[in-house]
Image: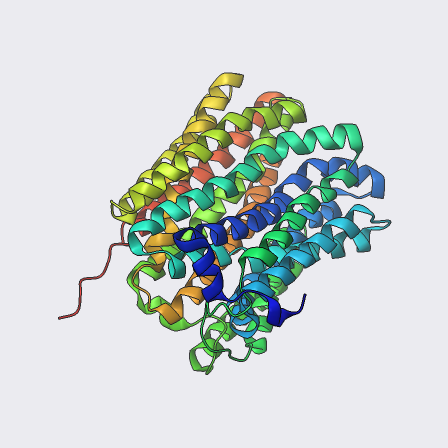
Length: 472
């Protein structure tokens, strides 16, 4: 069927009525679930991948970090893609990219092919991540935004909650290749929904503009250099110093260029809004704590407490289910209470869970660990909807898309840095502690306290996310 025969936005709204925006939300939610699933489920297959391709840990980690790097960088291109190609074409292209990465990655015959497909998947995931919040902010009135974001986030958090358990089962019974094929049914469903629900002429963003390639190159160079510099800190000091210097200088150059660019990749005007600037700081620190702990907990359970991978996955399942239940409630509360209060409270619970893990880990009680994880996920559930809404409310309509991409970018960048930081600190503490079981547990305790401290720092920024007084 040709494009001219496709129903227009006006026809679709007439056909579905007030339900139309919810159908659009469902469509973008399933696609985002697929991208998040592809980012988390592969972690359980890394030991099998290491054995199959004869990889050391230094090379095996790029299966995850390559995806994260690509996703972090491509997020900033989403506003330009929406302006240039529209919602339907952008979303369809990203889903096709994710589908190709999953299918070809599952048939990988060597490491370069495998890593290339992980980068392809990461590029697609980065484009997809900001779109649902943009849709919610543009298609839903203010009193419905919290509910819509809560429903969307319910689906999104369900994917990583079930991912470790499902992934462990698939790897054990069908091998590592099955992990890549998980995204196929999701992608096919989204492509069918996109063709039926999304109009070609959807005026989601406004007029098209040029892509800031120089800004994208600078931020890409900065991100890659900073993360590689952190990885080399433990073993090669001079190489780490060079990479971190290049990363820092590139970041300064990126900011300076964005301030004078006519059509910047990241509008520095966003940071004139106190709620957004504080929200970005919270997102960065919060990303460090969240992603760092997501990496740390399964390693801790297997290395220090000697649980099997299936047991480690199962202990996180109740916490994931609780998170999925809490988020819709938090979405409703985000429409009624100031976001900074919900964010600060949620971060407090998240920090408390890490402190409890550190103080109580010597006992290693399975059900206590499960309870501490549940406390942390309750806090996480209160943070997610309020952080997006609290950061973007008050922005002018033309800045919403850039604001959504920027918040996702800084959170993901914080997460990538957090994983590296947690790994460096853990390795350092393991080297300085005794080699016995008690020493390993103490090293993990110290690292959990570091993550709790990061969350506590984020609380201070969250308190400053109050709405600025109206101009007289």
